[in-house]
Length: 121
Image (cartoon, rainbow, N blue to C red; front, side):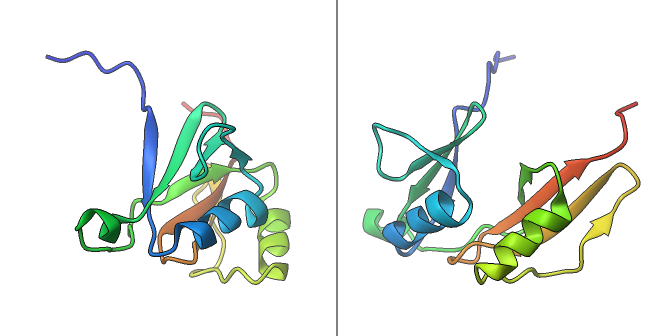
C-alpha cells in the first residue's frame, strides 16, 4: 500500500483564470501565493486554478465535491458574499454538527461555507 503524506493542492478548473483569481483573491479573500498567479492558500492547502481548454481538455465545473471553506460565522460570511453578488444555491442548513451554505464560483464550481458547532465524536 502507498503512503500518502498530505494533499499538495486542489485544482479548480476555469474558463477564465484571471476572473477566477479575482474571485478567490478579492471576493473570498484567500491568501495569494507569492510565486504563482493562480494559486491561493487556505491554511496549508493550496487551491490551484487552471484552464483545462488551454491543455486540450474539455472544461467542466466541479460539482458535488464542495470545497468546504471554514468560517467562524456562516450567516455573516454568507451575507458579505451576497452583498458582493455571490448567489447561494440552497438555503443554509444545519446538520446537527455543522452549518453549511452552498454557492458556486464564477465558473460554476461548487463551494461551501462551513462551520462545525458540535464536537466530533
